[in-house]
Length: 180
Image (cartoon, rainbow, N blue to C red):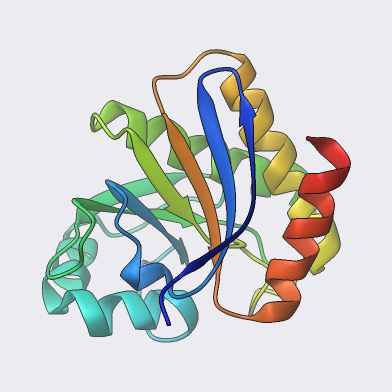
């Protein structure tokens, strides 16, 4: 079974979609990776992206080196359907100023995607996995950042929030219905 759109809403000229599925299967121009500052893609979403896309993604990441929390970097997408992988570095829960850092990571990822000429982006629930950011709070921060980005004007036509697990997908579904 392919990725499933659970909910969508339009904001300006951009469609935002909540998707349950495998981000490595997304057919968007960019997929966003929830990365660590050293761009070592061992586990979680990052590990899945490198396993499916190929070691070129890790090799290009190694050349980039360090990316501060709240920022993002871009590599090719290897064997993935996307053209690029944007590696967004979200905060670890407990390091301080997490909401602002997560917001900045999302905004950096969207900005970098647009700079690469992308019309469509798919991103996961950055920081809400092994980094421990509470899922509900993370969903609110991520959705608000996306809406603010769209409201400032963007050429992005489609922004998908794609998560493989049902719990995270349901939280994003609920939060999207509340704010759209």
